[in-house]
Image 1 (cartoon, rainbow, N blue to C red):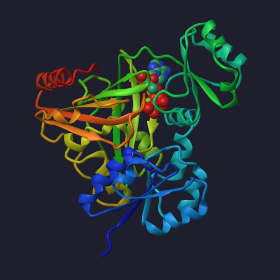
Image 2 (cartoon, rainbow, N blue to C red; image 1 turned 90 degrees about the vertical axis):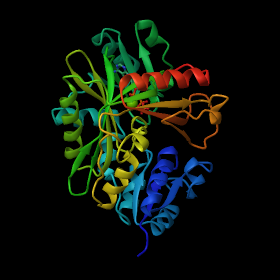
Image 3 (cartoon, rainbow, N blue to C red; image 1 turned 90 degrees about the horizontal axis):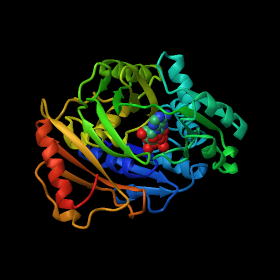
Length: 369
Ligand code: ATP
Ligand code: MG
């Protein structure tokens, strides 16, 4: 029997970790990415071509049995082309929703799921008007192509609006009311081809300058948790989703609302490689192949995990540090300011142990979190 071959559109660290989790299952991988040094190419065959190159996409399809993605901004036209030749998960219709913040928010609202308050913006005068409505405490975002806080501008008064360059208005935008959240959490959902749904324990996430820095799992319990998980599950069902879907939420004192969703495996789920019975990567592949989904519980009942992102550069003595229950993941990417180049996961059996291990690690590395 031939091993199934998974084609992944996008060859970044998510594709790379998907492959590393799929090899033990006997799966094979081919990556497709417009950049020559895409880091997944270090662990499998990489086809380098533009997403609009149909000849290359056809060749890619001929090499694989099923297609998924590590990048939610793969042009929908390319996905529609691929879909005619090979099954694609998640469905391109999902990408149509998730690639545009306006579509994403209206989809949530249409299904009774709260989001941040927002206004569509097409000009500076519309921005002036909407900013006033949000009491000059808002965030202007490009509707498409945003990641790691890119394409976002904080609006705090009329002065900050005058500093926004004219060319920003060349692309569709939305303005969101800034939410004074108590915490940010994400729910990782996996949904199989047969509609079976599982969720991992809730992750609590911290960002710096719009970039995820740490995730802690399970998040401290709150009365809003059940609702948060219900919303994420409802989204997966309503989208008829196959694979891993991650939904980011803002929690305030008494409410929870969707920030955005990622129609793919997600940075806040990297802890699951060592911290869970089944990683997000493995379950994403299982879902897409129609295999039974793996257990999404912690690796040991009552255990905890923390994930620290390495952004821009690694600490000097990176390889020398080998702490108990600590795991390195280096993505094979060239260091560059603001770029995610790796992460570490730390496991523990209780909050105190986790805290101590993080403090110890940070001290040894001489870094600040
Ligand atoms: P990524 O895809 O990497 O998650 P992104 O560029 O799509 O990031 P968002 O998730 O929209 O960006 O925003 C990044 C972070 O900025 C959020 O996790 C949050 O910390 C902060 N942020 C964004 N929107 C708001 C808001 N309306 N109110 C308060 N904080 C916000
Ligand atoms: Mg986000």
